[in-house]
Length: 134
Image 1: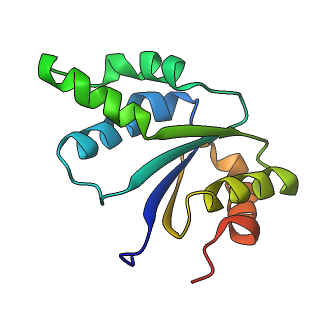
Image 2 (image 1 turned 90 degrees about the vertical axis):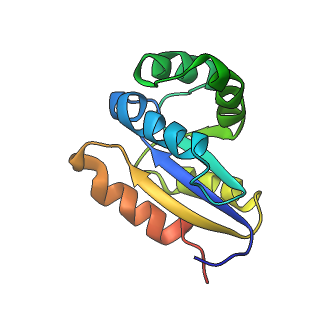
């Protein structure tokens, strides 16, 4: 990856069980231990509308948090934002791309916390609309 701009970690299926139980806890541990590149942001994408507070509460039982880490946990969730849309509509991927561009030049990591039945649609949408040109 280049050293320019932010690193955007885009989680497809952000409101799902896999994301709450596994993905967000692992991202928390990486954030807590300062193992992520500076400027890393997390963008959740899901069919349902998601808000940070609800997702944080649903993920909390799966995250090992000590007393002194609670402040850092707030900092972790402050780096999150969410976009909702379908997995098979070009207009929704265009909306996501517009949002991703608002962060400026960035490295992008896409994580599919989705059932295999939608992998093809999602990867086509990413390839056609959300890939960085460089």
